[in-house]
Length: 59
Image (cartoon, one colour):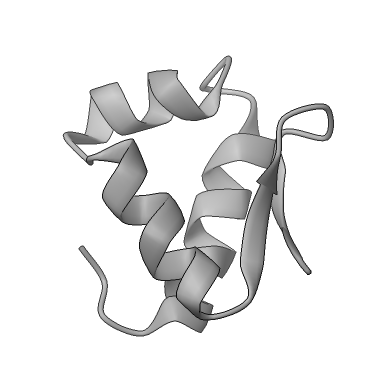
């Protein structure tokens, strides 16, 4: 997983916006990421996942 949370935030939102994944779960499964770890890492940087918008946003 990318260590810089701002780059990680940008990449995850790009992939979600891309339309190739129907949900965050789908993206994590496809990329072999642990959703809890991803949300924890981005949460520590001030980002939360908004399921209705299908993107991470600043708190």
